[in-house]
Amino acid sequence: MSLQERIEELKDVHQNLEKALDSETHRAHPDDLQIASIKKKKLAIKDEIVSLETQAPTHWISRHEVSP
Image (tube, rainbow, N blue to C red; front, side):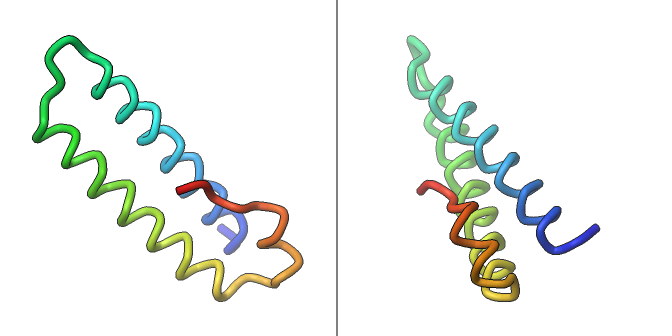
C-alpha cells in the first residue's frame, strides 16, 4: 500500500468516526464513554494522518486536506 493510499484510508476511517460521533451525540441518551472513545480514536487517526502527510509530497497534500 502506498503512502497516499494509507492516508486516504485513514481519512475514510476519520470520516466514519465523525459520522459515528454525530450519531451518538444526537441520540436521546448519548453514551459519554462512547463519545470519549470515538473522540480518542479520531484524534489518534488525525495524528497518524498528519505524521504521514509530513512524508508525502507537498503537491499531493494540498489537494487532500482533512477536516478537524
